[in-house]
Image (cartoon, rainbow, N blue to C red):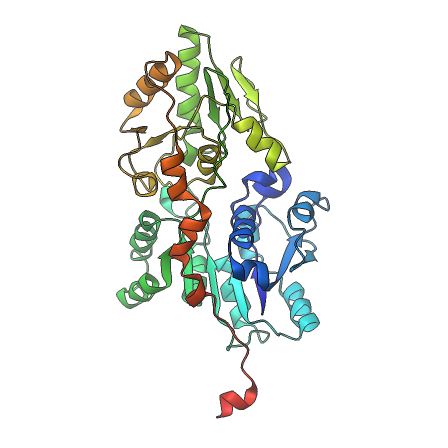
Length: 375
């Protein structure tokens, strides 16, 4: 069985920090934790951005064939609308179109792929969508949301990372599309929960260290988090913020980004606790999963998809900024113990979460002989 991957690379993962690229992390975890991922042959295109060694090193699998994709602009708004027709023509020519499945992580390209003559209608298209340009993301009015929806409509099923996200996408799509389209999307879009790495808590951690390992963007709440930290630093000056943001030097920050994922996770595991300050739109954050898998408790909003993912009994769900700040002070002052997270992380493990993907049914794919179509 052979599958062609339609990838979703952005400049965040490629040029800055490969460990933060959602597509790469999800695809690698799928390969590591499913029989289909280990047994099928996967044709994986990758962009030649400085001949990035990180991708080549991460995908040293005997059943993954890496194919270099030249000339791709990984700036997300450009990448989503710049489908590389000639590249995929060459791929189909090389393999004779013999793919049992098209596994797309980029709905915007899915539509372009399907309308070309290279698509074989006997090949099911399934996939995953990591991002939507909707007002809740703080995105521009001119964006690729319509292309994303059109691509999803061409899939048999498209996973998203929570029921909360699915409901939000259907709500936004209903502002532009007729009810019969929304009904079809409701069947196609399914919550496929993302997992956590194997639970490996550190036996030691650095007291009074707070980790912020998210992107510096409006939806991550970076601005208001560091505003709170600035004020807190004026009062106590007894903590460090470990961060993956290289260009944010402050008297209390310490950079822990690293191209090697294991080194990054080891540095992450030394944090006392982590924070999630997500605003407005907020899908499940894999940077949070990284920390939880290493035994680092995260302060998370009691909103968006977070109660759905960790459960209402998770001890560090906050309702507003005042509660958030109080939790930080209580943890720094040891008024609150650092909990054992094994109960929550075991629920979030990839093996458990992948059950929601219904792999055996959704990843069935075959190439029909012409005679079968005639019969």
